[in-house]
Length: 389
Ligand SMILES: Cc1ncc(COP(=O)(O)O)c(C=O)c1O
Image (cartoon, rainbow, N blue to C red; front, side, top):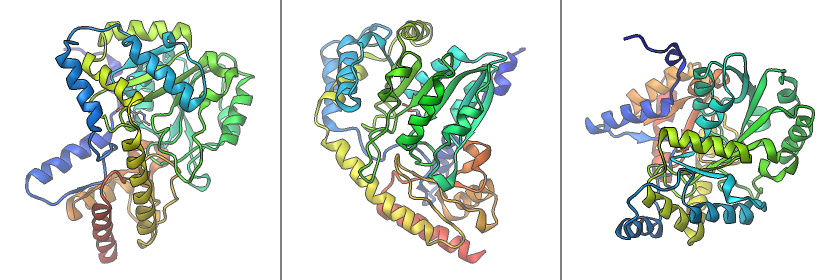
């Protein structure tokens, strides 16, 4: 068999490998604490599960429109009005099986040999993977620990060339938990006026998980880029629905049609019952979301304090999501080696910063979507490990 060359450029998401290895060790009887995987440890709220069961009982078993059922797109539009204060025509909304699909669609729409796409580094690994898969040049936007893992708008604007087609922004961010301050977004958008051909994809999948009373700064707040902004959001994190595979995007009108055509070519539609669950999630009680975010906030305080108390480790206080990204350079370990030894010798699964880009060396990603008790136990074990070597 002679496969297409582009497959050699396809990357992966190491969190899934670590999850599989951690599970194997667990199955073999080891006491594993998994701070590796990026998904809420809460169950999907009961009312949402019931809405899906009801949809199945009501006979919603067939294909739906490829861009999603209208009541779901209307519910998304209402949510956009409520939380982002913006009126969106439901025809610009495309429902997809997870936020990742929007990412893949957006990158493949712009990515080709000769094109440049900018992406955050350290960042969600799939951005770079798909950019390179398409044959485009992946241009990293460095995120700095000193500035809470935000980017510098001046640096982003300075990297734009006549080949730049798309800029990817992610706030709050995976893997750092960093939040880009509104002032930096203001500067970026102002500078983009000089580059009207450059599109922007704003990955706001963690928009509901911002702490310290800071309102989430969304790129949808800037009407001057509305005609070239792709908003990526979804249900996975906010409603603890990672396994349901449900996401939404708001596209510029013409691109919504292309996204829908891609959906028809690839998955036809999201499964119908899940779409009904999505309506209930957006329109039903939000207390479970508030409770979950409150729990994450409490765990954030614990993990940051405990990480900073470890020898030769320092950790910024992340402004959002459910990740901490401590600097472990002082321990003398390479991040990949420390990831490996922590898993095999202490039973704690975390992810090496190098899984998230060039800038990730010297860091580990901890997901604090786990109980305070487990976080405490994990860091006790890491403390023993670092103390003993
Ligand atoms: C920044 C970011 N964007 C998108 C996604 C994809 O989410 P989904 O599970 O909805 O595809 C993730 C998942 O980890 C993420 O961290």
